[in-house]
Image 1: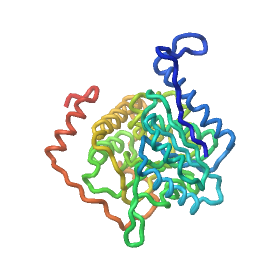
Image 2 (image 1 turned 30 degrees about the vertical axis):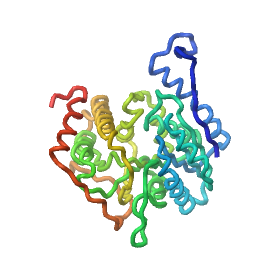
Image 3 (image 1 turned 120 degrees about the horizontal axis):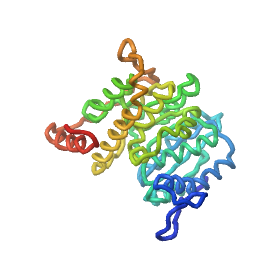
Image 4 (image 1 turned 180 degrees about the horizontal axis):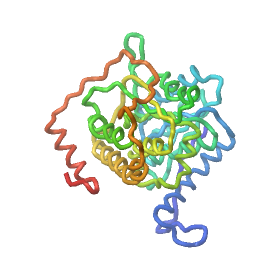
Length: 351
């Protein structure tokens, strides 16, 4: 197990320069900082040489839930992939010091690399996921992404929420059916995620012809083939939104336009601990990232032949589970007052 705090402290007032001595653009400077931080994790991965499976856990500072998440991930790998070479990679935001200490204190039955992206310019879910992508690609491994704030509960002899079989459901379509992207689909109360139901799903279905029901589910299965596409395609710069919560919109649209084979996995209910204060920020970043991609992909979807029938359901893996989602109390007036300003503030919106 390798623990690395990812510290990168340039001299005060200094600005990065390229190898030719020219002052780097802001985007290039961020890339240079990212490459510098990734040297140590990639060096550790190089000593491992190769792996069949990587499970990535991007984290902020979820010190209270990470032990449960790690335990479930390890159980899943031991139960379903005992004969394969597996690794857990955990990449955290600069604020994740407490969570990293908790990770360091936990016993490890599966190989583990854990580190922080110790630069405020790289503080975001998307950057943590990109760091995990880099490690998984260097090992030639298929990847499952599991969030760090998940919980579980036991009822009637069945685990609700995060369970060991999530690992199988996210990876087996890749291993046995040659899928490239597995998207989580949760059993939700209709009003639990209105942004996904009423905006993201219709846009993806209508414009991209891909019926992704739960874009914000947060758990992913990604083949080693698609990882190379994500990290090598220069058409998609890592903007602020992609580096943070807009990463989900980017992953889906890029897979669609790259011709990847996409399916969904039924994972049951999702038990997690979202921060209410971040809700508007998350909404704006996900929606803006999707709108940006729609504009950037205009030639692709403008030339796309409409599918008949119009709605093509995704291949689905996994069975319905008995656990029911929690009830959701909603005040339509409060929801509209919160939602509409967020939409109006998006560039180009005049509603």
